[in-house]
Image 1: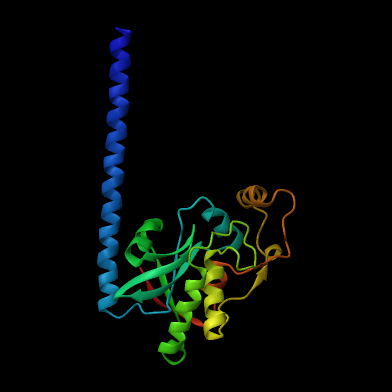
Image 2 (image 1 turned 60 degrees about the horizontal axis):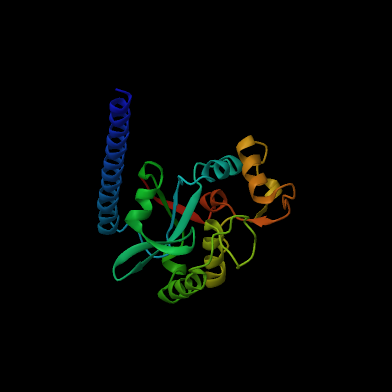
Length: 226
């Protein structure tokens, strides 16, 4: 009898696991399909263009700590470019890479995103400048994600990638640079993440650019928020 119950239990767990996997697979596919239609609409309505910045709430492990430390809803960002008439997001994850725009949107919390653009983009972001920006971005591709948020080019985090591309290729500084000590480091979630990354020696004087600082920049306008 015990053997039969054991077998039934294993079968039950297998079935539950299979149903969960089946459900997760189709939910992921649904999200991606919704995002594809969203990108089609953005393209048709001209609400997306080269050089745009895009923000989302990441589902990564460190997202909550970033939100709390910067007092912002948004914890991840990237820069939009097109290639062969398809839009992608150049982003610093692991590693720095190009991600199709629809997949990038689908990956964020609830598929929510915000697109921002330079107020004078039509004047400043000429074809020549955009090419410089793309070339600057290519230098960072393949670099590892910077878990300790250091202000060097050896590794890269998301908002740092955006800031350096704009500053070096277009001569524009989007967002105010801060030092780590200026953020809200009091929450236990934030403290725990800092201790994981740095131990007892937290580099409070390290220069940092946050997604929030770029998002709130007066140089930008909001083009789309879904």
